[in-house]
Image 1 (cartoon, rainbow, N blue to C red):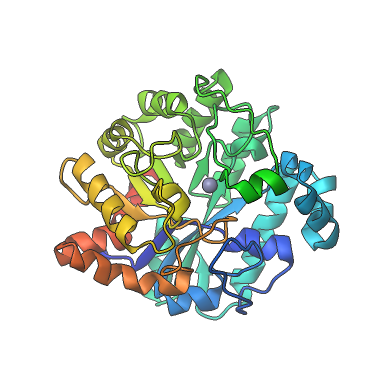
Image 2 (tube, rainbow, N blue to C red):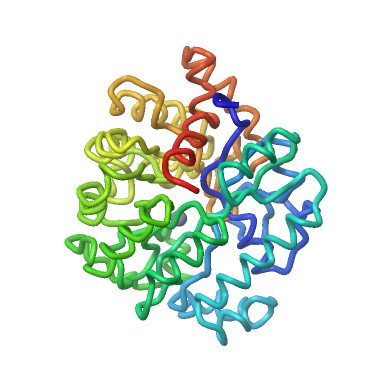
Length: 368
Ligand SMILES: [Zn+2]
């Protein structure tokens, strides 16, 4: 049990997909080989087909600024969650999405929620697929008493929180996270008001410290480089730090991707970097197929980790309004990652670290 917990994806959005579109995760709706928010890439059928054993399920409440985009504003009028997004607070939406995900997991054969390390071991020992809650976007914590909400989420079993997301919020500086394709610029000309100099705020420091106290893992994906450095300095010696869905600077020189300093600091904390399955972030060339850039990204992370495979994981971001590679178009394809890693010459033990062992370790070290 100490070794391989099963194939693990540390960042994808089945819960958001189900909540936004009112879907039943026991059913598969449609695939999407290009950007298509209506595709269902991480429903339970797709997870089973891909041999996923542990899914970290990122709860995410889309930020209000997105409704400046006409297409999304119209969508919010049509879909069941749109009314909630306009009427309820992000925190209320988050709890609603969390509750909905728990109902979905409860009624599905072969799936179970894991709210602690003990529950995760029990779920996997039964042979069921384990769902672990995480949260993307610290905006749901609000600014009044975010520390109390951190403790409430910890009590619900949430394993980690991504401190920032697409727009300026109280905890930390965020970096550009919206793909800048010509189509997006035309359809959704959103100003994400990035300030790359902005680091972790005083409130952010309180929240990150509270997370460590409550045994939750801080996730620096979407943070500015400055905020990432502040998190490593503040808490890197107390708990593993995560960057759950990203690429590497050598292949795509944008602030969103991990640089050598990130990987060294995350490795020193005992944390992990999850490789995103989205060519837009993986490579400046934005290729259709992911295979080559995934291989290069895994190898770069290995090299920056001091030549070990102890800090590399899968963080696909499927169903996160992403455009996945054509050859890894959803969770159902994840079984092909093992042969890809075999092809890079990894020992079996190292393959299993990347596929799930590292994810299991950070939960043991930093979760309840
Ligand atoms: Zn994200």
